[in-house]
Image 1 (cartoon, helix red, strand yellow):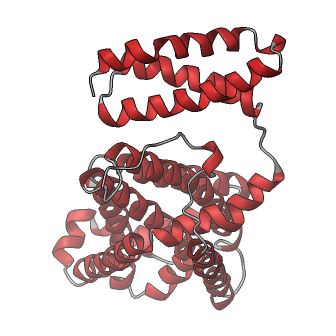
Image 2 (cartoon, rainbow, N blue to C red):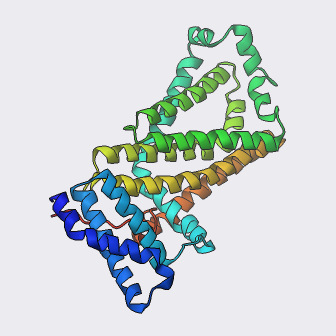
Image 3 (cartoon, rainbow, N blue to C red):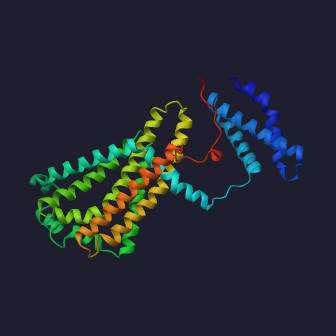
Length: 335
């Protein structure tokens, strides 16, 4: 497409649309109809330019023009309870369900890595001595030691808030940094599994693996699942940059990026639940079986939510993206 010719042909239409928008409160019926028609044409022009001959300055001008026209035609859109219901009942679980081929392998590989690291550390005293001095290790792993008091060293509400903030940041980093071909996501996963493996290995070598599992599993099942989901979505986003499939790379990244933002919001809610469990249930006086049972129930509830509601939503066409009316117009790829 010759951009200069295209601009010269359609500039008058864009200028006319801009003029109508400046006096949109005083339009008569014919002018209002003209505004709608020009808005639709300009949106198509923008899509053609973005897909065929992207020019930053022209794209910026037309994007602003289309946004103003959309606001004039459709009115200002306000969030409603319907949006919240749709997000929680369809959008978020559908996005997590669609990413399952990424986060389930990430969960399996990461968990296996943590177990192998824990076994290696727990069966090699020389590795343990490289982590800390024997006296420090005894202080960490003894009954009433630092591993146990960590969960009750602060007021429950403050501790839950701190845990939620840290985990939400980790999940957000996985989602955002996935665009860099997934490499930072793999590093974040490894760091988490290394920390878990160190605790697993040291407590098992001290004969207190049951205590360690009783402290980690109540909140850790749901917490790690949320991190794995975020990591899987981040890896998927990075792969989209490499292989966008039948969509243009710009369109594919926009769609997957919007779904990832929605997942970040949903996972913040999931991590709020796991943080509450870690702050109030893990350090509680409940029997170990009861604390682990609460964690297992929370994990099963989340998986049921994803695979039942999310699977049903995906089968009827939900992707976790914005509704069609809220997306930018795009031109299909040529066959």
